[in-house]
Length: 364
Ligand code: PMP
Image (cartoon, rainbow, N blue to C red; front, side):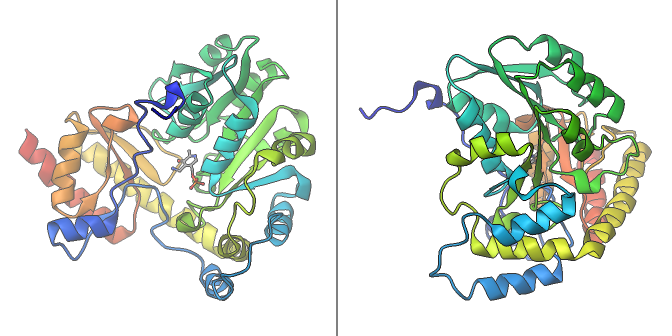
């Protein structure tokens, strides 16, 4: 028998949303709406698409391992030093690198549950104890999370806004939390959906970075920037911390195509603004629909909505799928009688609303 770490045995791999081509094939449908993985329904900025074509012309050359051009563009965009950035093949890989660098058998890590699955997954692979503090109404219970911290705690994960609920932590609550976390515990603020946030009291985390040496922000090009397929995300923190994490980074981990596309995407400032506005309009229509139907939901600061239908998530998922709409069942996300839907285009959202009404009617 080959030896596999005991903690990996029986673990389930990441369960992604169902791929669109698979659904089309299986159901013989021509129109399928994928509203499952919080991708940008408006695609990627045009300049990024052009950059992809150009960069794809030289596949035989390794990418720049330092990602110099992208690094400079992100540093300028955020107004931070270039050495304060750690790039990954998606922010998923930055999560993996953090766990690899900081966690091991005699350590623990604190997080909310339900939250993004990869904190627990990677921490468990490293053999760390995972302390999951139940979220209430989709919101992190920051005081309970503070209480769970002890001498062996290395990382506390805060997903803001939270996935899968869409709820956010405001400025005041986050600062009070940071004030109480010991300085030798890293606070990771996962901001995968930050571009969609419209709440005025969302914390200015880039500014907070200057005051808290134990804060690291996670950002991604997969969501609002529309580059999920290319896998590029990054961590922002203090130079000293970032440099000490860098040896864990695999060689050439971000492809040349991804680097060039992300650099170009940053230049298209109007794109993100437009997507944020459209998303807000469509999100509001979605919540109005829930209210009309008397469905409970978690107010969202993201491009997805967690809807409590009162029916098993897998049943709603299956019925919606049959009609060509891919969503996420809440079951695997910690909400058995809920669904999570990505806010799509106007057309997609209308199809979703129509179909969900029909599906729920049949369940009564
Ligand atoms: N964090 C959160 C909260 C997410 O929802 C996701 C994507 N599902 C990620 C991180 C990872 O994103 P990526 O690896 O594509 O950057």
